[in-house]
Image 1 (cartoon, rainbow, N blue to C red):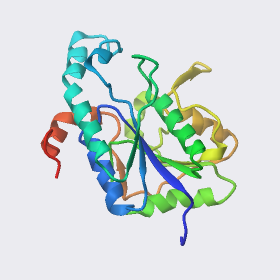
Image 2 (image 1 turned 180 degrees about the horizontal axis):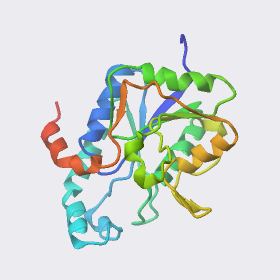
Image 3 (image 1 turned 90 degrees about the horizontal axis):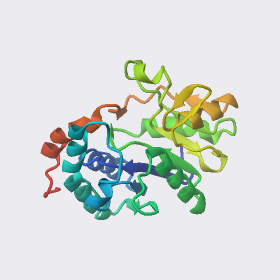
Image 4 (image 1 turned 90 degrees about the vertical axis):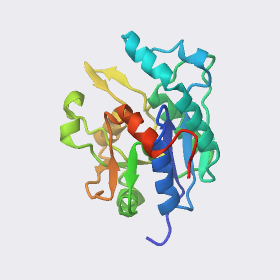
Length: 239
C-alpha cells in the first residue's frame, strides 16, 4: 500500500499505568509518523474519586483509591511523549465518564480535525509488526465497508453472550453516527463498541479481520495486573 489515508489511533487512559506505556511505545516503534490521541479519563483529584461509583464493597473502593498515584504518573508520562495528543474531556464537575463516552469524544475530535479513519485500540495491547494495521485498513478503502475489527477469542466472551467485542477497530469517521457508550436495547446489554458494530453489520458494512497474529489484546482481567506492570514500569523511572 503506497499511501494511507489520514488515520488517527485513539485510546482511553483510565488506571492503565504500565499498559499505556507499552502500547504507546509500540506505536513509536512501528508507526513513528502517527500521533496517538489519548483521552485522559483518569481522575484529576483524590476528592473527585470519592464521588465515583467504584463497586459494591469497601475493599474495592479502597483498592481503587490506592491506585490514584498511578493515574497521576500515567498522565505525567503521557504528557512527555512527542507522539501523544493528550485531551481531557469536560467532566462538568466531578461527573464520572464512561469508556464509551470517551470514545464518542474521540470520534467528535476526529471529525473536527478532518481525520479520515479512526483506529480504536485499548491500552492493554501489544504488536510486533504492522500487518494487522494494513489488513484492517484495506477493506475500508472499498466503499462497501465502514468498520473492521478483530474478534476477541471465544474463551473470553462467555460473559458477553458471544458478542464479538472487537479490538482493534478501524472505522470511517464520516460514516459512524451511533454512540460507543454501553446501553440496554431489546433486553440485551451492549458493551462498548458493540452497538456501533451491530448497526454497521445490519447494513452489511462491517468486516471481521482474522489475520492479526502480530497484534494481541490482553483484554478482560488486564486491569488486575497493575502490580506486575509496576515491576515492568517503575513508578518514578521511565527509560
